[in-house]
Length: 303
Image 1 (tube, rainbow, N blue to C red):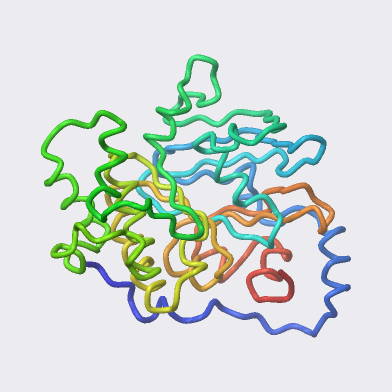
Image 2: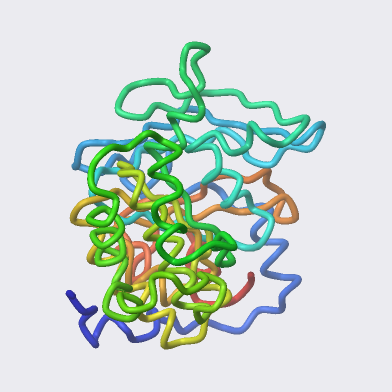
């Protein structure tokens, strides 16, 4: 398995500046003009790779409350895109827009378009179940089924009518999730008996078993210890050669380590409604951000 180079495990760069109070930072966030580097403005930056997702003017409301507003961005194929920002800025909501999970929440209203390989996934003739098969999801907390390890992986494949030798599919999925060597002699053991990190990798194996094109990850390491987190991060870097991965994370070091591109969002309490502030290559975002607000968040002045 490809390991993350040690130099990438270091903390993000910090920038020396006169200290500000938290209130001063918030007041400045509410009045700061958009990004000063045009090539990194969210509405203009486009990754050079082929896009798997193209979002245009995407807005979402929960009833009367707007959660995200006018998000325009493209997510490239076979790359890791990280969504970062303070709690409540709409990161997870945006992630769920990409496989129509928000459809399951009463009172949700969406405007704008989300294209997946140039197909509008919210078009009337698009089956949301098929969307979710192609665009898998791994949640914040491990949620294995109360079944054996084997059945956890095989269940989704059976439901989706995937043919072939199920034993081979289970082994391949567990190998891809870097779990096979740890559980190959205990496949009849309950998935709930595994450790937290193993359960999360089992959930990743379950997502891989239905042969998706994209994997969405909503803070997949937030409930894990540092060692289990490192295994998931190494796994993400290995899987990206075959899958497109979009991850929500509050961990700036994690975003710097695993992602190729980063999108920074701000929340309503900062005078915005889930807006995309800056989007660009992760190395540039973390070493030379084009917007002062991005720098403030990455360096820990707020959030």
